[in-house]
Length: 431
Image 1 (cartoon, rainbow, N blue to C red):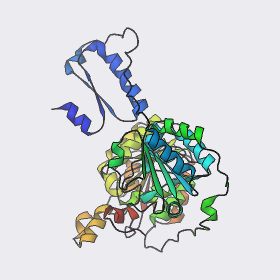
Image 2 (image 1 turned 45 degrees about the horizontal axis):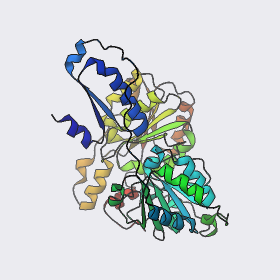
Image 3 (image 1 turned 90 degrees about the horizontal axis):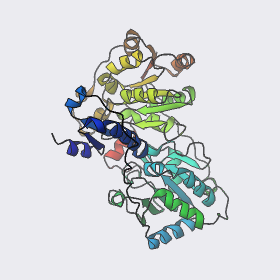
Image 4 (image 1 turned 180 degrees about the horizontal axis):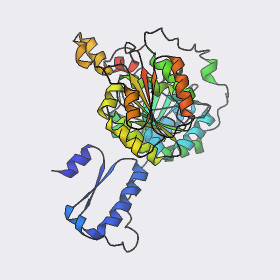
């Protein structure tokens, strides 16, 4: 098969190895690429090399040419700078590209200087965690408080984020704002859900450092989002027959170890833990359903547990996604990983239920009965807890105090609750 086309289509990097003497340098290059671009690297070698000895490389690998950073258009930079410097209610949106560019510390300094709120895209979740100006994730996976505040922003400066359907909340996230978009790849502007007023092709770190050098301290040090908006009432949750996924997620945020890596599988449920579970930095969150897939959360969380043993790895799965990957729980047991697997169990493929219901089709196709999941976890050598009331989460809190092997928490949530992302996917007005 055409390996190059296959790997390119997945936006990964392919390194072909044809000779045994190239192996060491190829592996070194692969790990260097992983550390810099944060994307998969595929090593493909001839099967005949399995029968050969690999010689120790003579000297370091040759240096790879680095892609040239784009030259900054001075006219566009001045427009960007003037608009941001003149903002009364500014907001800075940090995307994954800005994280990879190492721009986050400078962006937080810029926000402090301009008295701007800071928000992130979903893939940059945690980038500004702990900063007093941070609102967390914005858009379709943002909190009601965050989305209300951003409606009042008069300038939003975006660094390294794709302004897609979810980040812009269907194009309605920043209704009053002049939109400034900085990205090193001009193609990002064309893929956006909304049109930017200023488009700056630049590396986020370089652009931010220039802005810091030029823009003065804001004169008005008042916290504009409190002064202009006033109090935001906490969201009231309706009574439900089974557990409300928001209420469960809020309690889990309080009882799970703060030093954690959160991995979400795909499914209707994921909006609720994404909104409510805090992560301590941008490396504390993994989002696996990139093209709508399910079933990848548990294996990814196992990888996180191995890679970061200093943090408790927390996998959040739907019951459908977990059943697709159930053998991986045995992997976690055999590896003796003290990790947590949370199952948002609605006894269905929840997302499919929402779409079938919307079309008036038969819902039975997406409903099913599950085995006793905590019992299955115990049979495989882990621990399991059944959660049907909020009080049952007290058992979880006690178990977490002595976590020494995989713990599965089967939470029976109310599938009639509909996440906001479902309406966004249909183009429905969220206001």
